[in-house]
Length: 340
Image (cartoon, rainbow, N blue to C red; front, top):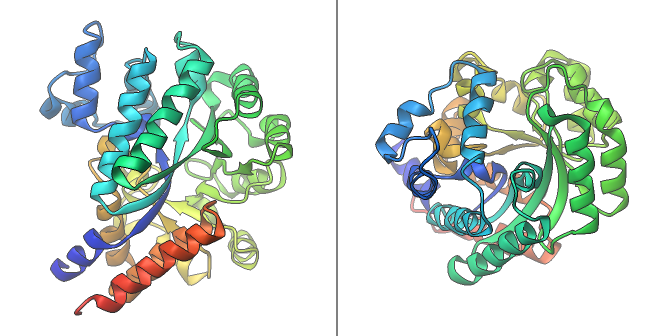
């Protein structure tokens, strides 16, 4: 894997499923924790590895929220966003759609307009300084129910920042049927936003069907249980509906028992358009480069196969067509120049 690892490290990429707060590196989390000394989050970057050891998905959500609690001021938002872009640039990520959950920060006291200004300021600075194009997916935190959905839709549609391209739904799936969020997705789609809910990560294929039929999903976050329903796999393949696959995350949250049992090969065999993503990388001890290496092992890929996965992400993205053409050309040039 040594040569392939080097190929991946230099490969231009797009990242489509990565959470804003969940991308806070130990360095960033430690800095935020130092700013807010009343937190239970460790201030030592080395201690964070032990802190981010999850018993199950519910425990992951609990710890995730403890990091959300560190985001208390607009400058916290700007710092987090700008530093995420720095980390993405180190991995040769040219374009990323960050899943942002504005409601959790606004309800903790950050004014909604100040929140929008902070992420937009960081977005323009990141593109200028690092060459990384950032776009936003505003997602509903399902565990906070319909009031959070209403507020997220309001902010997305009434305060819509320039970088916003899509509308999502994260958090626990069990106990939160996709259909109850239909009015909020209808509003967002009517405003021209793309629908990209999480579905089928910790529940069965029915949740994915509901995301497609009720929420008009154009991409599905995770979708690991799709392999349990051949008809669903065929539907996804026929309609070219991408799955945002995050292998290490799925194992860390116990959605999948092990990497050896990950359904990625079955998805690819069924002809589904899959993209490789990192989800909450520092929390899971991974990054996008590592996720591509994991996918290469699971699928038995060489450099050409890995480049094809990178093209999938560009195809599935909401980048404009000239941007897609430029990034695809970069990927092709990297493959053509690779000595292997």
